[in-house]
Image (cartoon, rainbow, N blue to C red; front, side):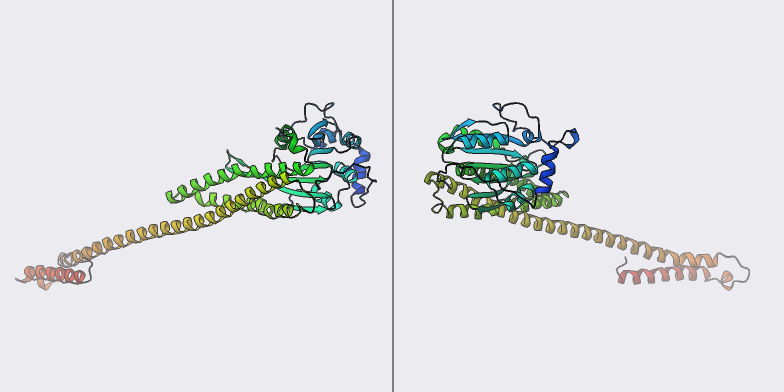
Length: 399
């Protein structure tokens, strides 16, 4: 892809599988009602100061920046896609870099007809939630990337999606989220014209590098979260389980974003000789591949660590529950012992009470009332019963 191509007009290309909707949009023009307008680019990526005119239509709101470069330097900042096409045709050996944010179907079809983009790639670019991948359609590369950024306030990872078309003389970026900040990538490339002069593949390298570098703060934030979670787990915080689960889900998404990049960059490096990639650019891409591999390995470690922490947390929770159940059982046992003692003494005291109650009824005909030994006999009877009950309860460990 690094060979220099002279730009020649391409024949118009039609896409009948999407034409009815595109035709309706083209015929109806840009929406006029405020409620039907598409959202503009996110804050932090305004239209360039050198753009001609103010944003008025749907295209101007979707085109974050469009520029034509030659020899690594910007030679034009067209204010529309049509103007970009014209300027690129007028400048042999130049490349166009078009940045779009959630473009309309009509705009993507316009780009497809101008740059001969494959219909499958256009269909993917119209829909977000694509897996990271790299596809080659003739001289054009189609790359899907998942950027990530760490949000400090909610302590969570936010993912964005980026689609990149790379051809001999053009680079088209289609963003479906706030990340990554491509204005910083463009600024970096324009400040290093010797790198930008290497062509469209150099722009792809810069985008890949920015996406991969954006993973570093995420890795640091997640590492800090894992350290905090470990402290919460051993402190017995009941909210730790929910936090572990939420972070584990984010790591699954992070793994889906980073792991395919390893194979994608290997595929790019495998085509260095075939497509004549500049030697200096090869070194840059190998550096990005090393960073991706390192990040992917860290994410794998994070997932394993979270799995271990979840298991430890479950064990600690089980131990705590067992300790609570044991404490309840011990309390119940002690309570039963006290109940047995009270019951035993109540039974012992009940015997003399029963005898005394019988002889206290004061009936006239009671043989023992006029018996000389009646009183000592009653006392001995009460004492004998009490001692017998005491011995029985003592043998049964009730006392």
